[in-house]
Amino acid sequence: MTEPASAARLVVLVSGSGSNLQALVDACADPAYGARVVAVGADRDGIAGLDRAAAAGVPTFVDPLKAYPTREDWDDALTAHVAEHRPDLVISAGFLKLVGPRFLAAFGDRYLNTHNTLLPAFPGIHGPRDALAYGVKITGATLFFVDAGMDTGPIVAQVAVPVRDDDNVETLTERIKEAERRQLVEQVGRLVREGWTITGRKVTVP
Image (cartoon, rainbow, N blue to C red; front, side, top):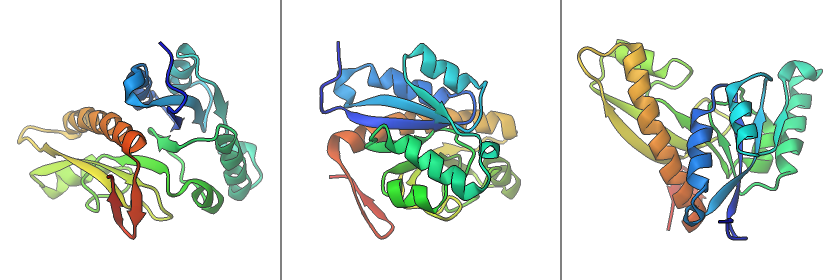
């Protein structure tokens, strides 16, 4: 069964295993989901995320930062490669590079990222560790549109994950990942089927 012509076009950016990418590819197999992954980009070769894309028959491109003279050149190249695929949404699925001004100018109102805490608490790359160290009883995952800050963009959705007394960083991170993946799939489908508006920090889905 093929997707309807109106299916939203998703470009997914990855740096690692691609488990969130796989969840999106699986969801897109249902025409009712309303989207299809048209390309997968990465900042490094030899990662499982690219293997997942190949297995699904999805075109890929790789833009390593070290392949360009400056970070601005890399940002220009990444922007151009994503733009070639005419995305309705660009999704960071474990993409570990901060994009630059040109990318945000092109895709800032449709570039989604997911973070493994309840923002604005505990931004950065060690969210679950920091939440655990602080002693919070509830953390979770946040889906947001990326802006120029560190995990500061307008929030689309959040899901809570209780912290257990016997949690360590690994067990808590794994439970957050499961909730994060479900939220990503659910909310991407909702956005592409219903649309959205961003007014200041408020994201509204009709």
